[in-house]
Length: 399
View 1: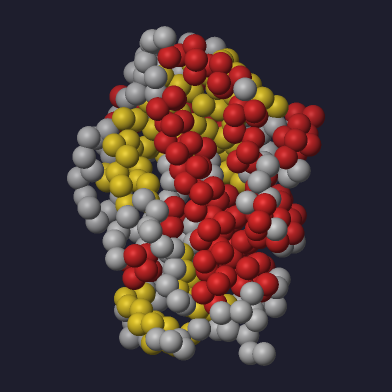
View 2 (view 1 turned 90 degrees about the vertical axis):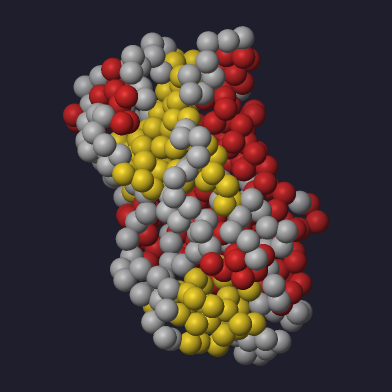
């Protein structure tokens, strides 16, 4: 039986891992990337157990581990005093891996993309910006801005939160501004003299803002930070999700915070402000031959650190269902995939939004309740990290 031809639109983390997942199951795919070269978007990514167990099954985890840092702990602090509110061991005693069956890593996005693309070794068509899809009963015609046209059996939209493929599938853009924005950067660990527990993954919390940071690099030589603030009320540009930032814009939002916070944010030139958007899940994730994965279907706020992880869950689920359903109509695999993934990803989206609210509380009675929840982090959020995507695809009746 002829294997279907598969085109993946977008060669980011989701597209590359999907290509690996298909190849591991005897399928080949071509990736089409609009950029002229593979370059990272954003500074770093956190890989939790729910993603790393799948990377291990794909024999990618060892290569990822070499260029990653494993945080010692997860710590929540008061952003102004620095007092620990809660802490949970991660690398210490291998506690996280023992609980969830796989490690937790911080990795530079460029390093992860480099590992995935190098080990793929297949065809990645750079400089191919998708302009149109025309679906028939037997194929999908793709038209690119450079004039190239291709006919394939299956198109997979891995083209992110501003997905063109989603517009084809559902007819709308789906992106909603959260009324929050962020400043991000990478700074050398050695220069952060006020930082407590530099190898821990930490949240510093305060009124209307928070700072997240974790170490990256094989020797934890750098710190990736993500400083989130309320506002602006409306995002000034419909067509781009970053705006310029002037010196002092970021640190001004954290006046009177702990020196570790202000030192980190002020350690380098922060020249961009990122609008934080979510993707309202479309009513359908697929047509007869076109299907969405990752942020194209369920872009979420980053406050549970699950954007890339949920995407990796998607691709493993879809790849497994395509293989298991190769004797049945393609639509059956797509329907099963959407059913398996919609509820879980919506739950993570909601948890991420609720976390933003909790991290930005002012000085009121809700703080005590919030702090109690943080001390019970494994009990409250363990369902995210313990999830086994492959098992869910193999035993869909259990989901």
